[in-house]
Amino acid sequence: MGYLLPLGILLVIAIALIGIYNSLVGRRNQVKNAFSSIDVMLKKRFDLLPNLIETVKQYAGHEKEVLQNIVELRNGLQQPDLSSSDRISMENKLTNQISALNLTVENYPDLKANENFLNLQRNLTEIESQLSASRRTFNASVLDLNNGLEKFPSNIVGNMFGFQKEEFFEIPEIEKANLNVKDMFGN
Amino acid sequence: MIFSSKVNAIIEAEIQKMEESKRQYREAGRKASVLCYPLAIIGAVLTFFFSLGGFFYIIALLIFAIPFIIKNANKSKLAGQFKQNLLVPALAELKPDISYMPAMSIPQESFDSANLFPGPDRYRGEDLFEGLHGKTKFSFSEIHAEKKHKTKNNTRYSDIFKGLFLVADFNKHLKNETYVFTSGGGKWFSKFKRVRLENPEFEANFKVFSDNEIEARYILTPSMMERLIQLEKLFEAHLFVAFKGYNVYIALENKNNYFETNINLEITKQAVLDVVSEIDSCLGIIDELDLNTRIWTKD
Image 1 (cartoon, rainbow over the protein chains, first blue to last red):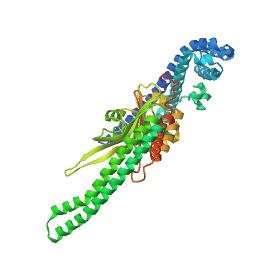
Image 2 (image 1 turned 180 degrees about the vertical axis):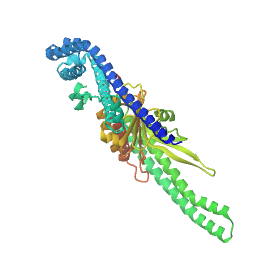
Image 3 (image 1 turned 180 degrees about the horizontal axis):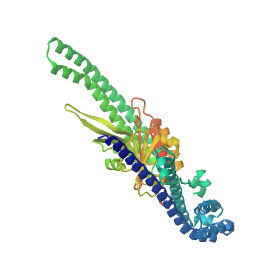
Image 4 (image 1 turned 120 degrees about the horizontal axis):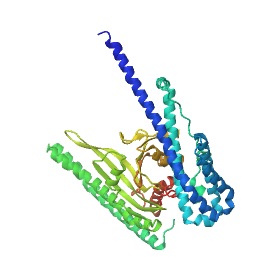
């Protein structure tokens, strides 16, 4: 009968370990899931850009520099061997360039009145809002995982099974500034 | 706010009529008091001296209550007249996009579909406003939803929700459900996940539940969180919000009795305008939450 107590303790420890391990796996998968939803939105934005560039070109030929930057960034994003940090940095630059383009729209009343452009602008705003939400969700998931990997006793389990901490997604300056998109578009 | 001469004339004539009715009602109340109070006292004294029993005490009490009943009935008659005969024409002129139905309320199906509170056993409401504010379709009314508690000897009701309930068309497309509850209140959901957000003041004041974290953050942008904090402060109320389907459901729980005037005071045009400004503050919720901004894909 004497072996029952240590056996019981071992069983409790094993159950706790399994619980903590599963919870860490869940958190890691949540991070992956959140990252993939960012990807979906970036892809949507990527597909929308040629249309946007074509429409703006017709009315706002003077904004060559911004348009050129957007085209270059889009081409850059198509490179197959792009590292994830380079990609994130280019996506952030693209966000800033699109915002810069939208700020210049005020100077082109014909463009502002163009139905096709308005539609593109709405779609872009939608995607940017979804993108922002996805980034925030990703960061919340990373916080959850990293907390698990730093707090006791889950840090022990994390180290045992080689769990890695994740980096936060850098929120572009334009989103940190909490700009009112309505003002930005002058609607 | 100036009324057209036609509406002005209607309102002034109605105010005069109501003041006249008020005088008549007061006179009727006074007569009832003069008659009923002595009668009730004499009845109670005689019942005591001749030991007539409890039944006669009840009759004396009922006689004593008659003036109160008459006064209250007249008061609610006047309150009804104020809404129907003054507020309705005033709003028709000042807010032509809004229809006002004093005796109606947000239907219970709508209250239930918000999923903010447990299903009520007794549901009442009044002062329904419907219409368009800018681009946003809305309706709001006062709601009193109660739960029934049955014991062996009696039945009593406790409040589930009492306050202002607003349903408005939301400016973004929603596929999932997101709920924002004031801390310490609201329903407990087992099927929805608690969503933690970045704003510490918001997190201290509210709890968020959703079946999609990304959509919850799509709705609850940093500025929307600030707006909800402001809205709760502005109305000094407990705030419950559901983002669901095409709509946003906003429940503001507080002790205020909205859209009423003190009938005991002199009825004036200003009293009408005061209620109109209350309506304006309710419409301000739509502005406060920026629901008229339609820059997303939903028109």
